[in-house]
Length: 289
Ligand code: NAP
Figure 1 (tube, rainbow, N blue to C red):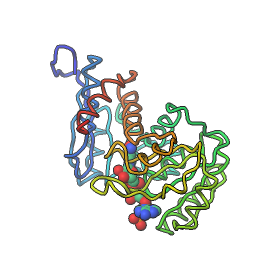
Figure 2 (cartoon, rainbow, N blue to C red):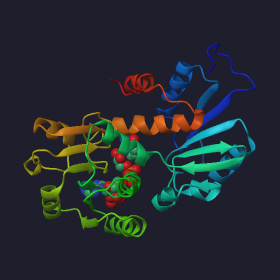
Figure 3 (spheres, rainbow, N blue to C red):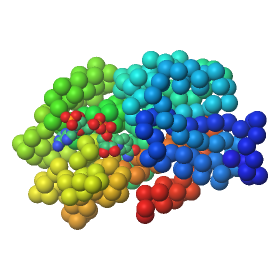
């Protein structure tokens, strides 16, 4: 909102849509960013069931500048927008929509947010063997981003759901130049993959609150020099990350991906660089840290 705190006819609207959205931290962090920079924007949360109508409403409302899209609309939204980035077509979901004078442009910031989290932590991806645990929605976004924007040595994906796993592996082989290896998750496949992995990324919900004592990786499989990234952000340090840190490994928390995907959205909404430290502080406060 503007420095004078006034909402006027010039004020641009941004919002998160989903169902439910009451838990969303996006209004708190985006509004903190708008306030910090004195931007003439506000950010609200709308629970939405009828996605098609919600998006035609956005198209008609010219001051409705930007939208964050969350569960369960990330896949269906592709049908009702005018432009989708090629990589996001392959991923098959989006989390951001920009309204350019009635034209809806959609893209995802989860994959780029994860990549930025790894780069900011100083992780080398060129020539690396990456092991991804999980092949669901977030894994798809991260896998496509890493496979198309970095020169990995190889990407191994393990998941208990064979259909989801093989679907992602086929799409990656068709849509990116990366070397893909997909195996059903099990004791042996995990042990083998851990022997070669330089970077391990947990994209499953295992270890998320309230199941804080769970981790997919037994500590005996860690090797010196590995980097462990858990995209879960509640808790900030999962058991997987705590175990890895106790073994002297570099760790990256999911909160870094979360803040980065929001920062990228902020830039698209406003054209301004986000005040990341202010947004991070509000996020941490909302997470009870
Ligand atoms: P999802 O679509 O449900 O994908 C999770 C995948 O992991 C599913 O294919 C699931 O298989 C698989 N899985 C479950 N248990 C497993 C196990 N024991 N071993 C191997 N694979 C297993 O979920 P998502 O939307 O990708 O989200 C995953 C996690 O990422 C959640 O904790 C979410 O909060 C977090 N996330 C964080 C951010 C961020 O910004 N930091 C962004 C998005 C998501 P089944 O379908 O058979 O269960």
